[in-house]
Length: 119
Image 1 (spheres, rainbow, N blue to C red):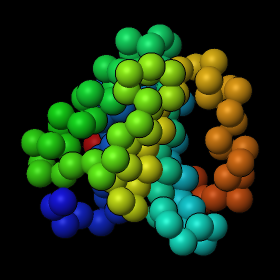
Image 2 (cartoon, rainbow, N blue to C red):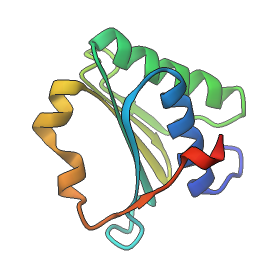
Image 3 (tube, rainbow, N blue to C red):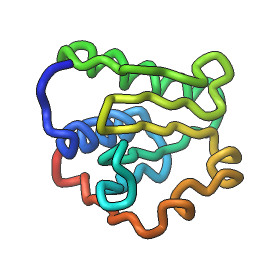
Image 4 (cartoon, rainbow, N blue to C red):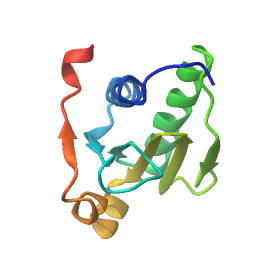
């Protein structure tokens, strides 16, 4: 994977998701809460097709920058897609799944990272 700071990568992921009209895009800084991941990027889509389109756009645009996910999960069902970019974990939910799993509540002690300025 291309060398890029995980913070910058998280902001890039948030921007790409937002460009695909992802809903409620948020970056959580979980560095002080878990030794495995630095940032979670969480967003949601209206339908399974929308969720899949967001994920495909992320993978394609980052691939163009020589950045590849270490692991992908949930692509075939497209209700909750997970893209693992080492220190950045991207979660793309279908709206109802996001409400059900409440990932932001689980990581309520995480700092929220402002990302809009990085456009």
